[in-house]
Image (cartoon, rainbow, N blue to C red; front, side, top):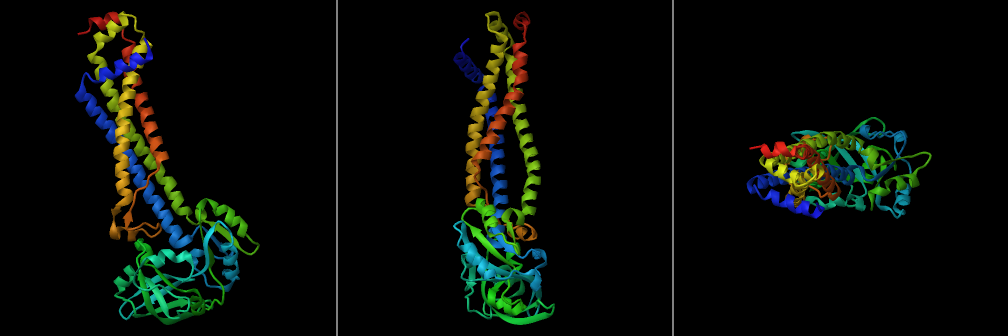
Length: 408
């Protein structure tokens, strides 16, 4: 029997019990739609956290003193980077680099009349495009200027918690390069909302030259931070800037904890995907088995007329293929629509994001289109469906014509 005729027969057989076929298609579509929606959402959350960390904290590449440890935010001269301005200029000349600037990090305590809070102080070059995300996030007041000797930027969340407003004086205390506690008064020039609550609650900015003078580190810096046009060029840029008295780190190395977390949780997500696929496969297998039991006499007639077992088996596999393809197509459309909504509107989680300190999670979580992963999920769903349909197809193919014709 021609292959095309088997397709026609399989298609017509599905129309015999339209209600059952419809519910089977709904199950497949919902399963695939759920897989795509979850994949798009999870990919968006992790990618968003990574991009937040890169644009607000690590950049794509950093050049540091080999002795420097970021978690300690050391201000010892021996741990800091000399000639940071020259290194930044050399980095800016590379075609792959979008922006490069020195930065000084220090641990500080912000004091008001009634309260205090620990935070990370950033000494930055206000003119650098590296800090465009903060410049664009100003919600009150104004961004820093290069000649500002008394201004400071605070996150709006931190300012609200401490009851601080623009123009108000605040006291900052740091332990300087000599190990002495130094305190000075600054004026709040502006407030920003970056969209990452944990960052807004724990970060403050002042001009680099003022931060260097305040902490007593001379013209040294903690690192030179770079943003690239393409993050894939990070290794090439790091190699170009490597030197005997410096060390370079790429965004993969600086965000290793996040990347390892993604790899670990991917196992759980894959297990969840497999469970959903198996549920869909069981529905398909059940539908085909019911179809076999309803049509046992028909199978006997077809076998008596000369239809071979492999053709009967192929006919049921084609029924499964039709159900799978139509269900997957509908599910892909539904799932993609859901991802489209999440990619534009997102899910607002508000203060929950502030409880996550080690990962730069935004207050709104967005989905992301990953067509390659969507295609693989759809393909694997179809494969699992076909594997599950092998037993009903084999059961139908092995029926003896005489026994099948005697069935009631």
